[in-house]
Image 1 (cartoon, helix red, strand yellow):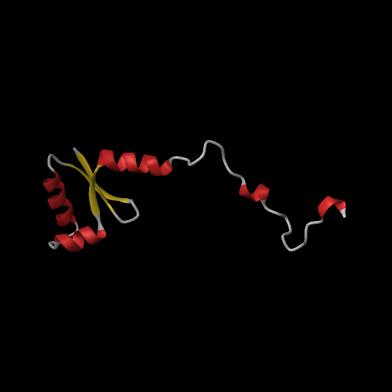
Image 2: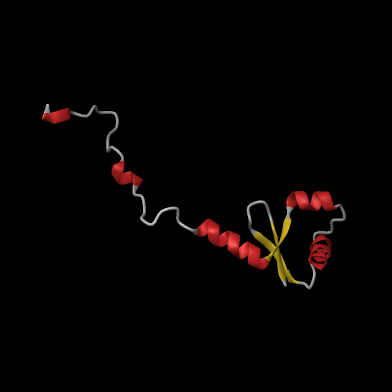
Length: 87
């Protein structure tokens, strides 16, 4: 099974193909030369590659089926009062 080491912003820092999650933890902690698990997990997270891919796929999805062009709905000059009914 493949595991990835990610930071708080879900950027992949490193990856490994390991049989057990404990093997991945041992490898990544060795690569970062850290022995304190609490400090290690305060900076990074170890997740299976499949889980990471599913999460990134969910982040990449659009919230709407059609794009919103907010700049077309904005007034071109919001400081000028709008004249109603042509007056």
